[in-house]
Length: 464
Image (cartoon, rainbow, N blue to C red):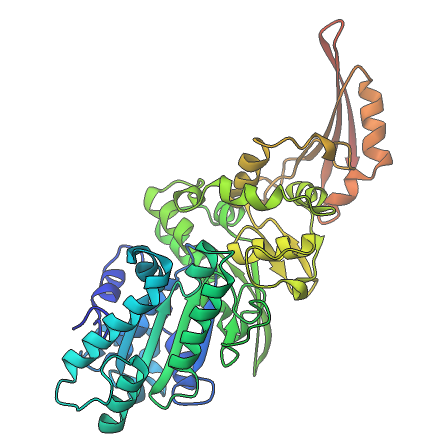
């Protein structure tokens, strides 16, 4: 077992042995369809905390020919697939984490040299009986191995886009990196499958299209992999039942990512939950914000404070529970090229801060957990200019578990009148935002008089 060549099944065995394991092994059925075909290049981009590394651990354990993992997979869904035995433990596997090389290298220019040297070292050590034409050339080394063994490689790459995220302005280094991946992977008969994961899609880094052989599966277009991007509703229901947790509350906290997939049986919209957050909530037996264990609101703040036309208004509208139209087609798939607010909003979809509805072409804040990160970010920014843009100050909508409670729309005033606050709720159509709600509604106008230091309140009941 090597560090990069045929790394074995240890990491996946840890996942199987964890208190919470959700079976996503049917992903292997999808990758098997691509093995040794023209569709063998797959790039799956999704946010942090959405199980990218675990998927690679599973694929490594399944394809690695140096281990017998049949017993490990026997109880999983994939064991019933027609392609299960055909590819089980049949390939040399190379598994690498690009972030590891970028972090260990003395500088970014050394990253590629270290990567090529380390991979070549393990290949030469394992295949010591083969006569190599050029031991320092990774591509030639793998060509020579394939010529002798006739066995192709499954190549698994994690954090493929880390260089683009950490060295956002270094276009020369980015081009050099893309050229390396192209020369190493494209049109090579020693490649049985490349499964590459990251946060950002790959097709539009400037005008350079070095990796155009990849099929992309992303938060805006998950293809036929949508159900593997996180935990589905059925999976979360089962966990809530097992851990005696309220399912409706789980939805309010962590649901909200809408991924549309197309297949032979038609289209289906998956409601997707963040796996990391669900696991933490179940294990701690407490719903709360677990997002900030891997992210901070500062990362979000960088983007929502950009001076793009209408961006602040869009964020405020979404904080009020609304949706915002977006054109995802102009996004350059990087973290520096933003021509419009749509580009920023699209990036936030890929980062997991927004959910994208491909049927309606809109974005929204997915759930309570993510909304809290927006609140944290906005609370440290001067956004006074967005006040009075046509949003009620406070709006309460009862969840399904409290259907006997009324909804409440509250407008706050100072040195005006409580009746005027009620009138503003009517005139500006704040109630229209509750068109999906049917039940009792209370309109509340509250005014504070600075001279008398007293509050006055007007209430009005309404049915919608």
